[in-house]
Each structure stands twice: as structure tokens, then as C-alpha cells.
Image (cartoon, rainbow, N blue to C red; front, side, top):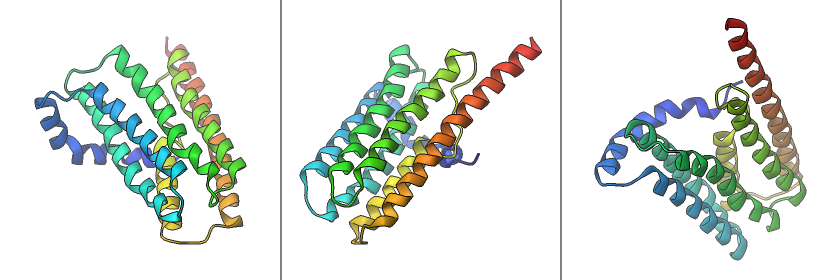
Length: 206
């Protein structure tokens, strides 16, 4: 199913000149990965500590920067010979930790209903875990939609923008979050199904 992740190649083309400059300057992929996690914790702390809806405007800005950092670290690893086992661990673990650090503090804010938000964050961890499990069973790392990491970032960024500009929260937000919970469950099923189908196709061709 369609996902914002499919726009990643076009985004990478825009970032490639910057990535070349960073590589020449000695910036490493692992440092960029860690920077993305530090950014997530800083924004999460601000969301927890700062009252008032304006702080939610940090979300779209920070999520865009984090998305760029995630693309940059991958390009540095693949295109500039910086791939490593440590980098693979940092990349997968960093995504999950950064999501939790940035999104869970929203459950303590008055604008967001806590229960669906926490369920959504927990399922986000499962979504990424299923993607990695595909590799363990002999498939590729699965990025199937409809609600992967990039889609979550877009949705939370949009909510931060709308609520940060003063739109009233209400029952609509709870319904939206539960809908996204449903999309997350569908994403888990899709990733597992496609991983199994990929393995089955390989075994059939063996």
C-alpha cells in the first residue's frame, strides 16, 4: 500500500549535494544518527515542560529536520563507505527511541487523549520491529505502508502545526488517533504478509 516512504528517493536527490559536503568535512553517519535521537529527546522535553499550545509548533519543524537527518545518515553509510554493524543497530534502535521520546510526552498534554496516543506509540514500535524481523526470516527489511515511520512523522507534524496555530482539540482528535491505530495494525499485517511472501518466493525459486 502507498506510503510517504515512497517519496524518499526524490528527497534524497535534494539532499545529495549536502551529503557530499558533510562527507568531505568528516561528518559520520553514526554521529548524524545520534544527533537525530538527541533532537527527539530535546523536543520531547520541551513538549513536557512547556505549557501553552505554541510549543506544539516545534513538532513539524523538528520532524522535518529529523527526517532529513535520517536520510543523510543512510546516504553517508551507503554512498560514502560508512556502513557498519554499529550503524545498523543505531539506525533501527534510534528510530524507535526517537519516536517514543518525541511522541509519548504528548500523552501528558491537555490537547491529546492519552490512551489512543500511547497505544499508537506502542504499535509504532511493533511496526518497526516487524520490518526488521523480515531480515531475520530471510526477507528484506520491510517498509510497507500504509503507516510507517515517515507517515507517522507527517501526521504528528500536521497535528502539531494545526494545534500549535490554535485549532481547538476535541473528540475529532481521539477518533483520528484511533484511526491511525487501525492503520498501524494494518501496516503490521502488511509487513508480515509481504515478508512471508518474499521468503516463499525465494524458496520456490531455489
